[in-house]
Image 1 (cartoon, rainbow, N blue to C red):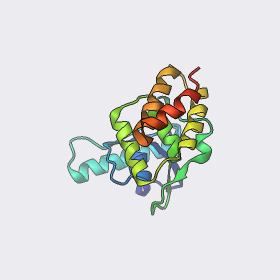
Image 2 (cartoon, rainbow, N blue to C red):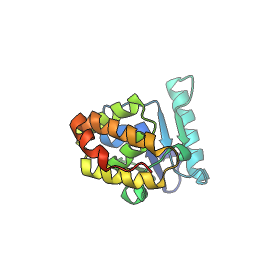
Image 3 (cartoon, rainbow, N blue to C red):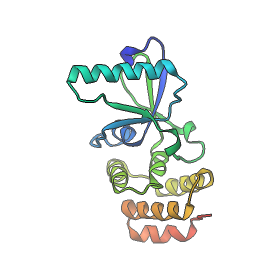
Image 4 (spheres, rainbow, N blue to C red):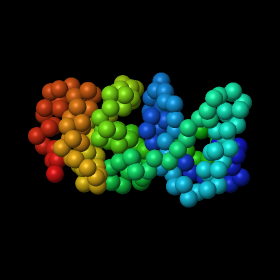
Length: 178
């Protein structure tokens, strides 16, 4: 992608690719999800060209999937101010990912076992701070759309997965779901 750009651009990666790039090197994913605006046409055209080149060079049936997922990404409030740069040796492309606790909260609502496994891999590499997760839960609860009871249940399931059932039982009564 970097080689296809003629000027600097920022790419904000979320999801499994963000986990693998910055927080749990062993985590693999088959696509790259981004919340970078598709209005940056020069960037997205460069991404498309780069994916086609990889497909041709590697003899793939399909080009690698890099896409915009804006609506399905539900992070806590003010998450962009906490984003982290991925240290890559690139000239024009700057790659960012959400801060680890924000990324974790963005994965909670779906409650998928593969998402929880990825978050567990992050936690095993560098433990999450329970207090920060709870704070970000409260921030996310206020800005997200949908059933907050489900969000709370999934959050407590994540806490149990990462910190044990006793911690989930301790934290649960203090969490709001309205």
